[in-house]
Image 1 (tube, rainbow, N blue to C red):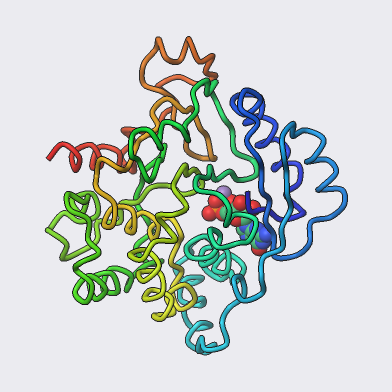
Image 2 (image 1 turned 135 degrees about the vertical axis):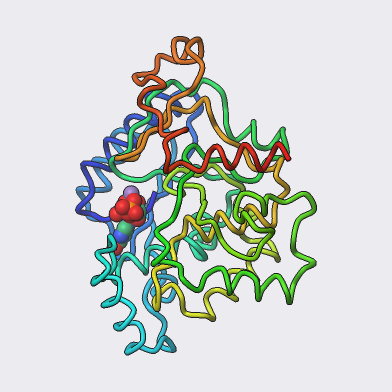
Length: 306
Ligand code: GDP
Ligand code: MN
């Protein structure tokens, strides 16, 4: 979990729910990261509700803050443009730091480096059902790389030049494209344009080695060189999603229908009533974002069927 000290209560709530709904059975370790030291209060309260191992890490300066080579005038103009468009976090530099960090750095942090699998958790999210199975084992045993619960469209003004950068990268490095990838999920015209579909990355269960691998590493470096994390407002959700959809096979991406999850304002609730009953879910299919007009789940299902 990446979190600010000011988010302690929301962080405690998320952690307590996931411990209760899942981790008390498994005792997996928690890692908390922050660009400033966690307060004693944060560490003490968090440690008290976690049964297994827990660690608190500081993010290296260069993994978080805007690099010196970014043209600040251009970055300022980019922020002003998004403020005028009324885009959420349009004028925020910390938000951009966070998106860049989550796109290309969290998996290299010394406290994360020793792990192969992670479940990304944010403050103030809700886990709505029991998770009685081990999703990491499921991923490992079924040769999966990336798991999600919510899929949706990105705001176009946050990523105007992202797809061009993606196409340039693919032109130079076609060898990194996975056979049987899910380009169909990202593009409705065979790769010419981006349809803005992505997996909502505030929930992710995924393989860290995939991000550390050659394809995604080179891809991230190429995107970084474009400066779009600061000149525009590239989110880690579209960046991860494009990476997963292009460099993993489509059968390596998994929709965790069985995990009830809410990051306001959107919820995913298991479809099957029997599943909701056995897993004691506090949601119904009516809460679910799955087939909302802004959801990309239908597109995902079409992409994997074809
Ligand atoms: P949203 O989900 O896109 O609205 O963005 P959030 O505010 O939830 O931020 C995403 C994640 O990054 C959450 O886990 C936040 O706690 C974390 N985060 C966002 N900004 C900062 C920051 O400036 N410092 C730290 N340490 N964490 C941040
Ligand atoms: Mn959030």
